[in-house]
Length: 235
Ligand code: SAM
Image (cartoon, rainbow, N blue to C red; front, top):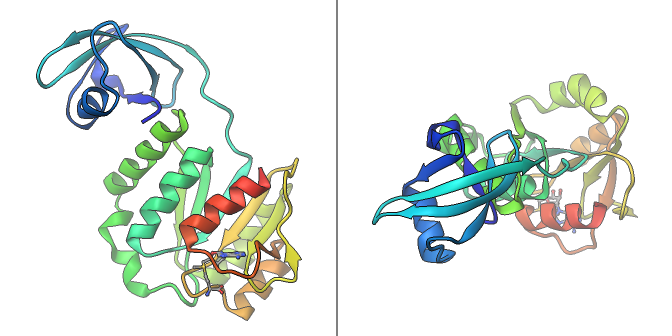
């Protein structure tokens, strides 16, 4: 946790918040915050700054807050990722949000298991939990938008062109002929495939609608590592 993410409901006065549960435990046991210590904090969808520990009990910690700085700039990225297995979905959300992604689509693809769509990991509370962990990791407060699209062809043909417009469109694919660009200066739309990879048809359709296939080397990486490697390289 590199930033204590605060919610309106935490506030007991305009400049004071009291935290219990996971955030309390983390501040006390991992960060070893004690009276007078200052920690980085930020209000969800709001400003960031410092919180001074002004009160402690066995189950709560009180912070006096000065939240004066804007949150960090968003990453100029739209991530389009074939829906991974639930455990991987959590890691992808946390990583992409920590990098600063603010628009993420999880889409269908031929090799996406149908059962993944009914996972509890896709419920609003479960998604928010992973988003909050990503924001805390990246020192950010701004919620990303996450969308789910269960029809690959409809998404690729009807929605993707509008998303790619004004961005550099890329499809990460280990068998691509071209290497992934690095240190790009424009916004990027990045498509990442499922565990078994995109099919040739899918790669072709994504390319037709603006997302050129690129690779990161011939070794296929796990989705969550590929996302990190791609974002690190691109930005
Ligand atoms: N066997 C699959 C294949 O060869 O495409 C591996 C899929 S990998 C677990 C999931 C996704 O991560 C891929 O579809 C691709 O989008 C991305 N990825 C993983 N390794 C990559 C690499 N070396 N180059 C480009 N993309 C990669």
